Every structure is written in structure tokens, then in C-alpha cells.
Length: 103
Length: 170
Image (cartoon, rainbow over all chains, first blue to last red; front, top):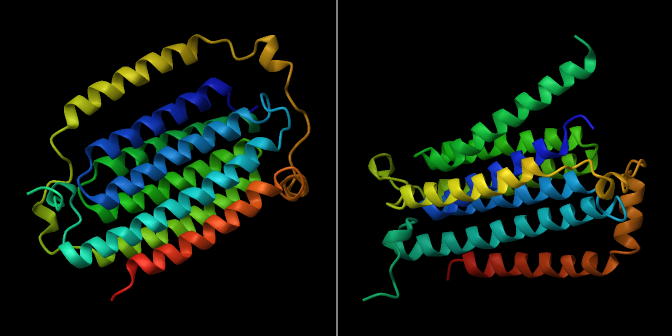
């Protein structure tokens, strides 16, 4: 292996934590959505890193990764459609200005 | 310098650049710059997939994530820009508790990761020496994993119809 397993896992841990920080801290809804993409990429890196050694069939990690990539694309698309509809009505994409359910 | 050392140096520098771009995604005030940094991170992760001998996944990542998802994200950013965007803060007031909590999480998980011996017999005994080819992936997707494969086609159709319905003008 070109890189030892724990270095890849440290990389995916840092990527995941940066994504979680983005989800917690960003005000722009699109900023939150792209931070979610970072989280899903970290998960994919973990799946591919473990698939040669731990999976009972080495193809399992890559099949799972294909599904995660597809679902991440689906989630981003539907989320951005909601953001577009929201922007059309409220003219804002900032989370603290979207307080429709609060009087 | 041997080729292996050069390759290792290259891959480690790509990992560091991907982490720097990920920091740019969450810290940059301009959302368009953040989206471009995400493109950089995704390409770096695709390079890591090639280093991990998962070339098909690397190509899928470039085509789907960088080609399709980032295009949709940039469309949405362009369509929802406000004029006074430069002076508006892009992070809410919860930066410090978030940094503290995430720092604690990284410290705990990272310390356990580094302490663990990944070359123990239980892990190393399962190392597969066969490379995964696209033929194996195709056989798996249409053989053992055909049910999630069909279900994900339904999910894609539902997402397509849902996105069109949610975002249309009426």
C-alpha cells in the first residue's frame, strides 16, 4: 500500500470534522449543503480504504461507494431545488433570516 | 529518489492540499469561492482513490461529483446571489463551541486511531490480493447487489421528478 491505513483514516477524520464544522457554522444554506458533500466524501474515503483488507469481498467497498455518491448527488439536487423555491419566495438564503414558522 | 518515494510525496501533498481546500470550503466568506474550493477537494479525493487502486470510483467521482453536482451547486449559487453579499457575515455565532466540540471529537477518535495496530493478524489476514476491475464491479452490481441497484434507479427518478416539481414556477 502506498499510504498506511491510519494516515488515510486520519485524512478522512479531518475531512469529516471540517464538514461537520461547516454544517454547524455556515449561515448560507448552500454553504451547509456543500459541507454535507464534504462529510459524504469522508465516508467514501473510509469505505475505499477498508475495502481491500476488511471486506469479505473486495468489491463491496466500491459498490457501496457508488451508491453513496449517487445518493449524495440526489440529496444535493433536491436540497438545491428547495433552496431555489425558498429564494423565490423569501428572497434570502441565510438560515437566520428564514424564520417563517416563528411569530 | 526512487519512484515510490516520489509517488508517496505526491500523494501526501495532494492530501494536504485537499484538507486546505476543505478548510477553504467552510471558512471562505464568498460562497462562490467556497464552491470552487470544494471542486479542488473533490479532485484531491479522486487522486486518493487512484492511489488506493479504485480507479473506476475516481472517474465516477470526477464525472458525477465535479461534473454534475458542482454544476448544480454553482447554478444555485448564481441564481440566489444577493447584491449586498460582501458585507454579510457567512458564519453564525456558534464558531467557538463548534470548534471546541469538533476538536474534542478529533482528539479522542484520532488518539484511538493512532494507538490501534492496523497490521494485526485479524486485519492483515483478510488482505485481498486481487485487484477490483470494472468487470468485477459490473458483475457485483448486476449479480449480488442488483436489488439496491434497481432501488437506486427508482430513487433517481423520484429525485428528478421531485426537484422539478419543487423548483418550478407556478
